[in-house]
Image 1 (cartoon, one colour):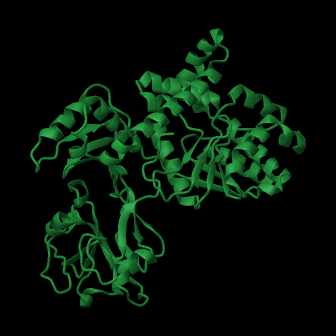
Image 2 (cartoon, helix red, strand yellow; image 1 turned 135 degrees about the vertical axis):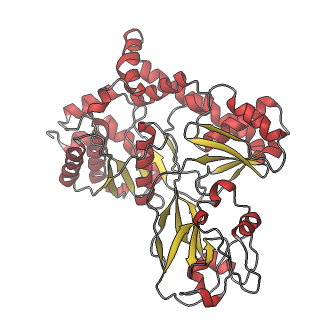
Image 3 (cartoon, rainbow, N blue to C red; image 1 turned 60 degrees about the horizontal axis):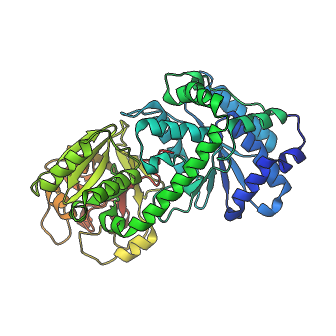
Length: 485
């Protein structure tokens, strides 16, 4: 790098960063650092901005995801580390294994990145991404070719909360979304910044690369400012969509509710409420529901035929609609998005007290917080799993199995007859797609405790204090299946 730090602080890119960071005073900053031109330029610019403007009081950390898809992946990670060392910026580097599991490679790689973000980002963190107007134009064109509607054509928002969880205060920010790739490249070369070139970006078998190298250059010959214009278009579409959502908010709140099941989309759709509305409104509500669950709308009438089956089916019937990587399923007058189960090695044992979350089939096993435990004391309802207040637990180890491998075992609850798993599933309203996979503690080979679904058990069966067993919960990851952009 051959530039002075003053140049980096005073240029348009730096001033734009300062402006976009104003609403996030003193929040910790995390930069998604691939090693490419745009993210390396943002690394250097951010570093010098923060050095010259200490009043911003941000702490910067870079995150590099090594996907291992290229033979050069380790070299790219080393280059990112070297750049961060020069700038005294901490780097968190993570190697991931891509599980395609029915998805395209790009979607699977993106999901793996968000899994890492979920694991490292603290509360109130701001995740910075160096997406630019050229990326936005490509995304718009891809959505257009896919037949997306208003929401999809809005492409990438400049900022959004990281997840759909109302308690999550983490933010994703794209401060350079109005600047083109050419503008950034000119500045990066002027500053003498080096970056890595991913050879896969030249492979036009991937639609994004085809749009980047063939379609947009052809349009630019006649309309040189197409990228900037398309960025303006996406901003207007996003504004229109926000207004539409505000007008339809009462209908959305009545039809769509949150869902906390693992392996399941974060939002459920009420068939009873949906049927009250005309078709045109039903169509929008279903599209919005799928969008909230990060799903594309399939082509044709597949979903609408399935919905008619759901409307007309008997109460004990559960019509399904499978497409892409998801299955839409009905259960108890609601419909859900169910994700494919990733192939992963399941832990055979769990050690209590639990120190950190245990991964289990697309979710995690956690110990509920103190507030949840204290509010649960002395309740006997099975509708809200809870624990009892006891002293600290003695470390103990339990076998951990999917419930499907525990047929014939009994659930023994204080002062009540032993129960079968079928009893528990029905009382708790556990949807069928989760029953076989539900993490369960096995005691003395014939007694089972399905995690999070009972609030008491015979004390003579326990090897540690009941609070540790009965306050365990299987839940989705904080980010879960993440947003597509």
